[in-house]
Image 1 (cartoon, each protein chain N blue to C red):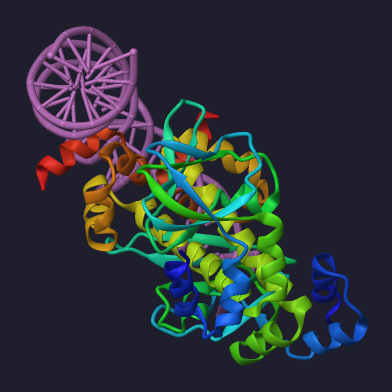
Image 2: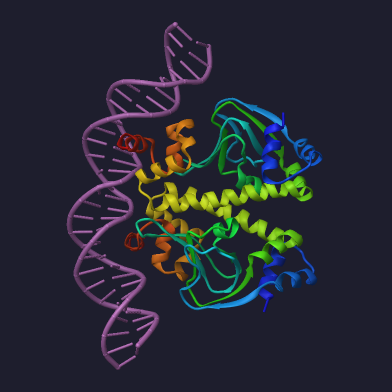
Amino acid sequence: MFTELENYIKSVDAVDQKTLDEITSRFKPVQTVRNEMLCNIGQVCNHFYFIKRGCLRLYEIDEKGNEITGYFALEESIISANTSFMLQKPSRDCLVSLEPSELLAINRKDFYELVNTVPAFAKVYHQFIEFAFIHSQMRIYSFLGMEGIDKLRWVMEHEPKLLTRISSKAVASYLGMTNSTLSKLRAKL
Amino acid sequence: MFTELENYIKSVDAVDQKTLDEITSRFKPVQTVRNEMLCNIGQVCNHFYFIKRGCLRLYEIDEKGNEITGYFALEESIISANTSFMLQKPSRDCLVSLEPSELLAINRKDFYELVNTVPAFAKVYHQFIEFAFIHSQMRIYSFLGMEGIDKLRWVMEHEPKLLTRISSKAVASYLGMTNSTLSKLRAKL
DNA sequence: CAAAAGCGTTGTCATAGGACAACTTTCAGG
DNA sequence: CCTGAAAGTTGTCCTATGACAACGCTTTTG
């Protein structure tokens, strides 16, 4: 049940089984279908998710109705509608599962209790957010200046899984271009 | 000497004077001139800075030689070449002071000692990085889809200080456009 | 104070990529 | 195994913006 989550935690910090149990006991299994909405725009996000199997996507819809992907998360990682979860404000993002997924969910109260009482879990969260920040900065650096073709090459090099696993439309919204442009660029390669 | 830093810490968490002293005693004053380099590309960044007065800029140079600004920091905030500081790898970023500035610097060893032993300081760091992440995501959402004129309006609304305080050239590199384009857009408003 | 370097503005020109539309392919769900 | 909706492809057209260059203004420095 919790093997993957336990391994994930152990990869961040050395912990004994008692601590692991204390952490995992707060998580509840959740099964999703394709395109299931875990947090909708306007809701306050109250859960953090660990992905055992499947794939989630966080995205926003701008004033023109275009979708912009914040990020994707695949198995062995954690995700939530972070801004809403952290600030406890109505979310501007949607969090959906792109595939039928097996998740482990922890609610916000339990989450912060663990952060404040279990150093290993604090470390997990701390590392998650450091990584998320570094990744965001990397995307800003990579995508603000680059032309489309170079963005595509960049993803092929740095996050190749996205191209095999995720719909072109969603990838295009991650790269900041339309799906027709992405399609033409793919043809060019 | 440490009034501004103490106020900054107190704004995050209630702390007694003893704790404040413990924190501030690790910081050393640093004076910079205009365009002084605090961390160059290729160096491992070993300091975090609190800005008492002045303004710092973190930027990268892409393969075409164009500058891309990661972010700016004004007074009453903290900054470093984060990715390098966190991962202890040679920096891809430059950290420079745009104006003559009064800073307080803490080295990496002291920084992490404080993070690990003084909960209030851990909270300061934690909040910094949450905010930095949220800000980065906001920029991705705002800048990936938008046209130039809307990016300009966005900064005018959300970070107006940048436009009065910082050179057009640097602002353009923050918005992901050339300075001539920014100049033309300004004329259009 | 003079010279030089850098910055901002404005113009012209070329092009990447968005908007839209028509068509084909895929695949989820019955 | 069908079928309809969604996703992907490709074409045309048009506009936003990059590249480059010329010029004037400001700031720095010797």
